[in-house]
Length: 159
Length: 159
Length: 159
Length: 159
Image (cartoon, rainbow over all chains, first blue to last red; front, side, top):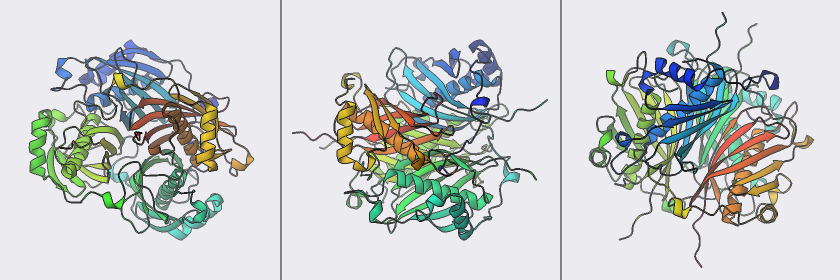
């Protein structure tokens, strides 16, 4: 119910996570190579920052369809990876963070150039990470797609 | 990450909630009157069933805009209430279940008649209830809007 | 603006498309083989009906990740194809119908079995087709994912 | 279909609308007062710019629920209005632009202060305007909600 909307996750200002990433691009790249080897070569982490990440999906002839361009599933994959990387940077190595929802608007036909995904976390709670990813063709600042994502973060094991 | 998608919430078949509602329409109506008195008269619970609920929003002259019809915020409210009722029926009295996301497509201009919302739960986990609500003008089976919702369910206090 | 929501597309009852599909499963399969040969073998059209279609995505060892299951991009592809097929069945051969938005909730871990997608059109206008697709693992009636889609239909060329 | 995603709306760079707004805040306020008088006092247009607008929803005791805060329908209304204003600024007086979809994530409990909506157009085509709105409680830069919207723009009458 949204009448007098209450907090669904997290505990307000005092619990707000620190804005310093726990992992950098090289550490996350090594982690992904280990747990998702099938992604290797598909995406490149260009930069991670506080609540943000930028990834590149190299596009070459093998990606292109006859008469075509970057496919929907490829854009889905880049959006999903970019938001996962932004979240990992803040919470640390956590293979079990899973996508619970992804909503994507396709805005323009991508060029036959590398695709860039800029991820931004809007809310990082204890159980959910919510944010968006804007996709661009390299060298053009008009977005080709925009995705909104929610990730579920598994409870921390105490040890 | 959706490569080898894992379970975000709940524990599979063995944990699947029983499909028998815990509360009926009259009990939920009494509960809503108590915790959300501002809703009184706005929506009527017509039926609750396993993972389902049907609500009616009475439309009279006072709801109608000049030259108009049912507004977007009214459709939002009906979708939100209908899914809340479907969820309450399954989990019991829980005022603190909150909407975490609501996505609505407006499909057709509603008639100047009562609006009906048919809610369906697609996944009832321990922490999330996910499903959709289809909105109709009474007496016309073509949907006027379709909404997808996620509710966060607060952890149970053990006692 | 949703105050007094008006019609965005289509013209109400009189313009409602006939509910008889123009194409059957075999005709659409032949059309997809021609215009999207890269899909061949990835999805099988099991049934088309009025405003509906059911597709199967065969899952074999080559789809499975280490320790894994059906990936997010594979579910995206099945949802996208199933809704495209449901739309094609109603409007006829139209390669240029494109996805403008796709919103997917991941609900349960899919089993290592074929994936089924049940598409349903909620509104078929002149310019937009809007509806949803529910995904199941074969033999289990609890949905593994639910997607809402919008397709843009190109204007008809007059001859 | 998203394999080799094509353009759904608009015609690429050459058709990109000029980035200069056609209307300013005062002109749009006058227009809204005329066509949506029921909104008067509910929202205030603070600023419009190229592909952007910022609106304020004044929150006083009359908006607050017992124990409560800003409601979901109020946030829906602000998001919807803010995106409508951003779109009107670019296309001119057009009462018939209608919301076709609105997807909102509720992120944090809003404070009992005015609510601010920052709208951004990501794609302005001939038939669709697509973008997002981020909602804040005044004086706090952590978003309380984030919405993605699509508006249908009616075809221009030629004179």
